[in-house]
Length: 480
Image 1 (tube, rainbow, N blue to C red):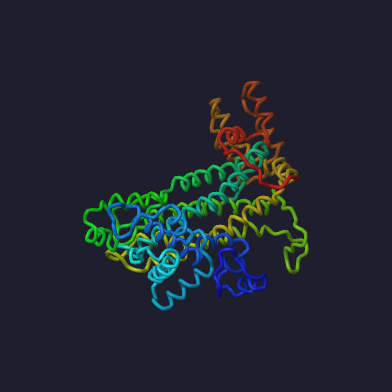
Image 2 (image 1 turned 135 degrees about the vertical axis):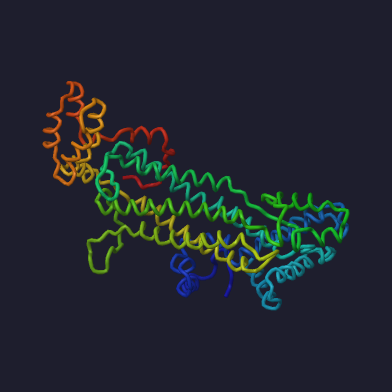
């Protein structure tokens, strides 16, 4: 089977591959996850490894204390870097063919590079390819770059779009009152925008964690001590060389490792994504519930079917798809963050196979984010439904909090207990509330304030909280 970064090949072949894929990330959801192949496919991993091998080779050539490889001029460096900047499907196939012979993926890569570099310049010393390296010197840096570039180019971009949409919804609906629900029961009113603002702020905070994330790397040999490096070139400052090399890749150098980089930073990333998943899963469930209550309707899409038997259905499938995929992603990330930082003594291979699963986990995240974005984009607020509920007699019980609090302020006897007797488990209406207020020995101004009290204006500082603290909105929804 051919390996292509750009999903090349004819359309029928691509469709057949999707139909025969074992998992949904590369099958059913392939149109939504195609971009991830640039980072997490087998061909992409090989390309990132080629990049590390070439940059290590160039770093050796640039060190005047290492005489086994002469300095390489700018033109020569460009030709070598072209091995990864112009990496082709045929190159990936050749590496896999060599791996079939060697049964070792990184050794196969070394042999591939010897073939390619010999063709570029017969004078370059081929045995300095992979000099003093263990496979993990190459792989840990490849994975770190892979994750860093994916996070910057895809993950943070998608999350920022969703945060912008939530911020826009928060500001747009900041003054729209609605009955809140605690324990599933009617509670003191809030506003539609305030509830979106909470999720927007939570998401922005986690995005900030992702932006600050360090991506660690090591280049220090078989057990992390520069054993072979020091033996071959005792005069070279290998610590300084390693640090400059790793930091030159845009990564954070880790000086103390075993054969593998310790993977703590991977656990940090995965745990952050799990927190993001949890926040967005809560959002998806809440919006699903608001749709069920009739607070929102969904724009219909021509040709869509909501049920195979019930023609009227417009299901909240985007939010349900989001929930299911976030759950799958979090389960994978929780395993990876618990497993990867643990290695038997100086190295075991259990991390290698586990790390290959991160692409599928991020695939589920991106499918979920796409579904959530589509779902939010189809929401239409049902102001009439929300207003009717908050104006109904059923809503009047929620002002009991306001009345008993005002009674406390004025020193009246047993305010909580008296409101409890009036409202708990009993029908409450505007009239019954008005009758109760009329019995209270209060001054004219306080009585006037209570007379103006109704569920629709008992929203506290909800709108002001949105204006002052909600992230700025970036509307991503279609115009009405």
